[in-house]
Image 1 (cartoon, rainbow, N blue to C red):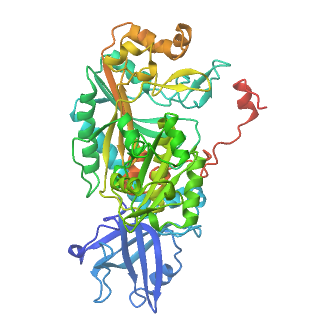
Image 2: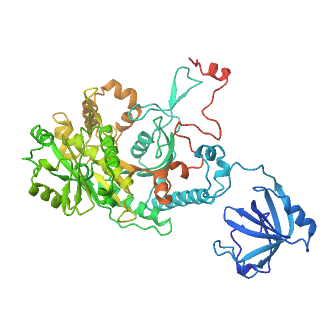
Image 3: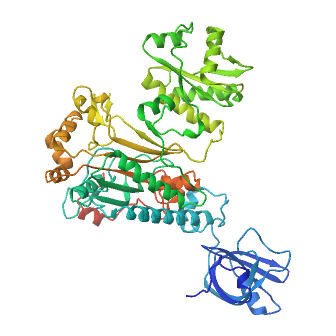
Length: 584
């Protein structure tokens, strides 16, 4: 080893030792003779002092050092003089009095300082990602990622799971997001697809009798990007045989608790609460609510049944409902803020958004004249509203009103900068619908994927009333972010055929898309199920980062570009000819 210690390792107990450290020049400070260099590596910073009275040549050599050059320093560890201790860093009690200096490599002036609070655009950070990763916060994020993955492997291995790698080059099965396609040179005109998930392969591993599988898997989806999406991302994939939903809950709660324990100061209570999808939508207008902020919805339809306000009255007569939420402290919003909020709701499909400010125990609104005082008092009581709060109401058909009010709720949580009542809110969402109706194409589609098992008691409604059928599916949600999703799978070929028929997949289409899995099922498939957890999304919660790009070593931009390597890029005409591809 070139070094005896790392830059964050030395303490007062090392005083008097001859040491050698290596790292990057963080700062270079000339204090009227004495020269101080802060030397940095992944572990921290150590101060090095050069004294011209002891070694003028060495001192002059050190004066020429540029920021971010890589050097090797040998010298003695000594106490810092009184009044110069730095309690902000673990090595702040000591310094190294330099006896020799080796310049291992020099650096150009970096485009930004290697500091956590550096003010530079994300584009520059991503272009010079190798410099960005030198920043302490990025070092912590990537080391936490390692700890998290190790905790996953340790926990699942102790439960009898084995890690199996599945193919990256596979078959396109267009059920969900758009596939990334890879042309085959050896099979002209044919394409591989990068896996959106290892779904089909992990099910075949259950048919193969492996019983318990997991994989920290790379997945690829060619979809529109945002702060919590990347074209390639990492998920924990899990599958088990001879289980039901309860087995998933038990195993995953233990795992997630141990993942949280890998982060200092983070703890979780188990079991996690469970909320049915229908109840979730009714209470929060979302299937991934952040429960830390309250603001549960109330159905005001009964209270307002005899209202003189025609907009509400007409909606109720047409079979619609009136749902409301109460935002703590929302009455402080200005008229302009309210106007923007209404426009936000309309932009997301609302026909309108009514509001009431709570003042002196009563409700104030441009429409309050249409309501009796006892009706307004009843609304205040039902909403548990207090002075300074803001009540918002949407009148529409239930399926339309609830999701919009859910978006309004999220908007207000951010706008009002509401404080969460607890650090973490973790819950299971269960009893999802098995199908969703595509009004444009006038057909039913699988809500999750076409191998999700229906609830046993709902199978009789598959053909007669598909919208009534619930799935053996479940999501785990943390702080309003869907962290994981999974289901118990169909292992009965006849039931699978019935489900395919409901969503319009005939035998030939099923064979073309999923033939290799359906063939495997003919040889004895066990009951099985699984789940996938988003590693990147979990890490953004643990680190408090705004974007998953800050927990991935080499991420893409929102346009799917790697600014570091300049990918995607054009390719040589010869390569295109080999692949039988022409660019139009």
